[in-house]
Image (cartoon, rainbow, N blue to C red; front, side, top):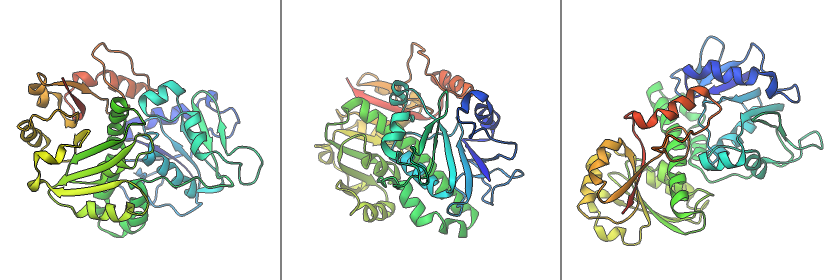
Length: 369
């Protein structure tokens, strides 16, 4: 069985057409046939995938059961710890002679947008192939790489995706559908938002500076994913929340996997002094982000704030903060001069170009003036 992953159904045709082109197949081994099965990250269908049903990407396949897995252009797979852990997981799913086929970008574009490039893949996953002396990673052609099982399995990166797979990956399918879908939705939300927050911090502080990071939120997955990033240098995470339930579980999971410091406090006990040593604040996963940031405004905080919401919600702060919007599709800044942000998907590139004119929630960096 060969499968292809999409963001949603509206991208299926373009995603498949990309790999059907003769230009993508240097080794004459990756072009899909008509039996290719589509799966989406937003699907409510949790049954075994088939041509008749578009199942969810996180269906728990048996180990070594799928011949080829194609990553569609639309599938938001960033080159962070979550994306690395996801690809590592897929290597367990493919057959011994199977392959993962995915789009890659030129080095500069990949770094700018948080996408995968050839060097990013090779630095993490390259090994001699399991049954041959050649590399297990092949450059196909024109923006496509393929990965196979190597002699040395790639190192495990710290990520909440591993926590999800190890704690819910199989068990979750024994629960009722509403609980399954809730876990799946939160997992994909973490994958995207954490990549954007990570890129904001990288843009602001670089990869070397040690950062004390504070998050106000109702779920700890995103700040834990950011805090464990290999690409920025988070020294300490402080988490302020209404409830510490998932913080406690994640703290237990990462306590012996990470050398970071993780602290939590109920938001009702928050004091301004708690931010004295903080370098950057995020306000992302709350039922009412706007209400929270207006409360923080009273403290006249002179720290960069990473806010998730609509730009109009924070316009009143533009006398104290420079407001910088980030794309929902690429981990880079949106620019008022309409600089083109290239994407292999024509549909997504059009969506990126129209982002500044729509009112969707997005990551906004509030940089103190």
